[in-house]
Image (cartoon, rainbow, N blue to C red; front, side):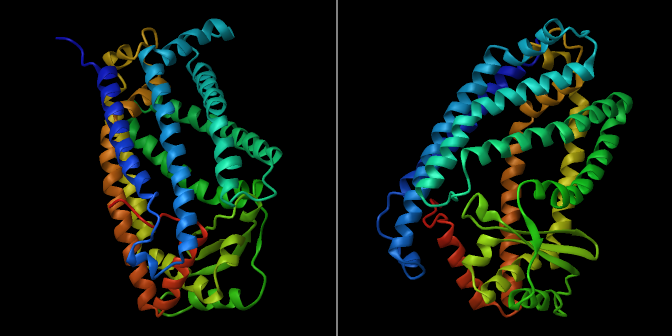
Length: 400
């Protein structure tokens, strides 16, 4: 019986997905050349804002289609010519290590892929930031080439500091855990996820942005009043603001914290773009996610997905045909290679799950909107969301 052609199946599916998504992107791209806003949009925004949104999104979409095509060609060529297998096979002789030194070999392999990715993606990142974002007024004056490369160096350093030890621990758990390793991996990643929820806002975010408490004033008092409402009762401990405008004019906000130790973080751009009343209404929407247990539900869904994925991986990790199909003849079923190959063949399931999660996310967003309306912020939420859509030049004419 012939082995299943994993590589060919992966190439066929990835190409089909790229072609379908390119078709959808092209349909949306054509929508950005509509000059006159539809009646339902015309009553919400000015033609000047509509025109700016159309031009910005057309540029972004065209750039996305071109870069996506290049990345698809790159990925296809790597797979067709067994580039990953070649890199893995050459590591022992090039770096003078034993072939069975799996941890060291895996670290070098991932390091090489990291460098390749950063180098090949660099022109696209520069073009997006210094051409597209600058052309449409989103790049800040502070975002210089120096700051851009400083951020990139910090990102690489964090990847090495956090990612390398995590990968080694993951490999060791899989090797030690036997047939039930997926349970131990799942438990480890759940703990890691919670640890990162603490580390990111307290140690990683400050590496890129200035984080400081929101000054005492009307806005802070209004947000605290919102959180303390009896129908919300959000255990707010502190409100922070960060200098998001240092890099971009886009706005954002997020919440973090465990149990009765919650914090809200506001980008300074968001504070500038909305009134106090609109800010409170938008945060009522965000607190609606918390009150309606969307965060907990998403955590449970993500946890179940993670467990299912690693259970499936446990069925493939010893599959010699999978490794050989992608050119890994002498890999001895290395764990890191198994993870990489499994993620490739899992992609069909991932796309289906991604579609279902998008549908679920939209449901949660509508529920959070309804929560804010029930709290009495219908008018302010409407004007706030319209204003944020305008300021961020969001899509105003979706394809469907």
